[in-house]
Length: 164
Image (spheres, rainbow, N blue to C red):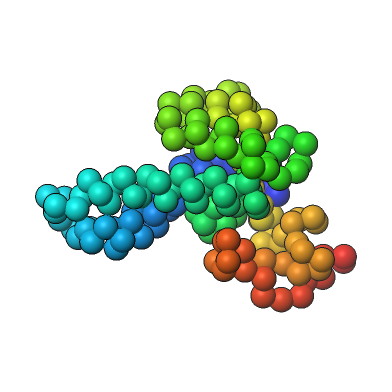
């Protein structure tokens, strides 16, 4: 099945994860004073640790609050509970801890849900329809959020006729 609210393909999910990690690594490198182009830099280990911590905080907070990380937002994906709601802080913590273990995220079932998603009763779905319109319920009172980044990965730019 394709279209909005269908299960996101594994390639887009992996690309979103790589985007999130790369952004966290760039921020961590600037905090630790690490030269990104030099692996033998004295601050390499510090940058790795800070990147891991930033990644964990980013994934946890943004998934709990909105179901979106920066990478997911850029690729039109969203994490939701199987009942359609937000993951919330408790389930986002379970999901993030298992995601950091790597192996549960690599093992998926026939529904394309990793073990971390099954444990947290979540699923990663597509957010945009093929025509680029947002499905009902993903806007905020008639406003729509296009592919853009703002506070917490959300950018609201204009009025949308979602009621049409």
